Image 1 (cartoon, rainbow, N blue to C red):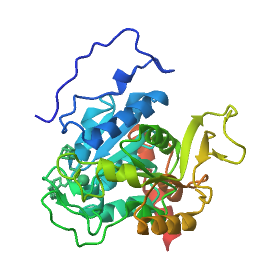
Image 2: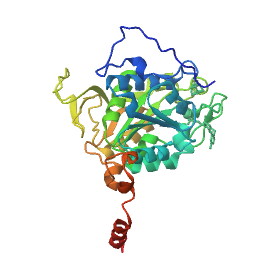
Image 3: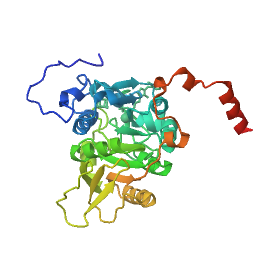
Image 4: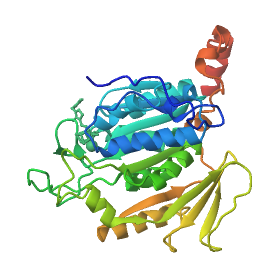
Length: 351
Ligand SMILES: Cc1ncc(C[n+]2csc(CCOP(=O)(O)OP(=O)(O)O)c2C)c(N)n1
Ligand code: SF4
Ligand SMILES: [Mg+2]
């Protein structure tokens, strides 16, 4: 059984958002993941973010691959569009859906096996093309669903539950996302909702390729001593560079921090993020600086979290392709197939 339907009733006094929806309207079926799995906390953060942003559930499209992480879209946004694709192929399915209908908000949910092992090529190309989406990797360093083999994000020298040492170098998806040109790059921890919820909200508002690597411990196969993706290890080595404390619309932000410690970031759509700096020497607009900062801190065994890079003027795939605004299924036959004269003109322009 991979899902259990939740009863529909709820307390009449549940708070409502500006669209009149309660939290329950953003939930899905009852989770069948292991009790304590980090992935369930990420589902909770996604529900919270969509509730707080007052997103109409039918405007959201969730796509995933295969894995415990890729199962999670069943457990949130039960009233949204969803497609559970093939192992490692979520990015191309998402890209196709996005090209056909740019009116929806696209959420790609994947695992470290799904994106860093079998789906590494797909991951890379979706980011370098600037597909407008929120791409979340629920990163536990193992193939949870198939019982705990090391994934490609497992750190070299880390130990499996059975005591084997991983001798392969780890793929850092954040470092790759920065190199590939993603215009919003963040890392967070499933156990830190205060950091994760605002990051998800900001990523949804970002009009380009937004990637969030969320370290999400697997309590069944990778939460032991010697693992670098366990709850204890991540808590001890977590180095947050900033905190996204407020995300508002256009009204001015009132910030209660020391002058200079908060940076205001204007997003393309007019929304505003207030970024509280924790590491004084960190600049979230400097792609190259972010890459070296990450490498330096990784060498010291630290896991850098927060909003690591944001481009305030992102361009997306539709911009590059100059595609029509309207979803393709709303175009009529003449618009889709404008006839031989139009075709001759196109052919002539290519000669
Ligand atoms: C083409 C293909 N190869 C292998 C598998 C077996 N398989 C299913 S899930 C999975 C790994 C999942 O790991 P990850 O993406 O990290 O998700 P997690 O379960 O850890 O959340 C593998 C290898 C498959 N389903 N399809
Ligand atoms: S096996 Fe690991 S990843 Fe899968 S549900 Fe259990 S704790 Fe979560
Ligand atoms: Mg995994």
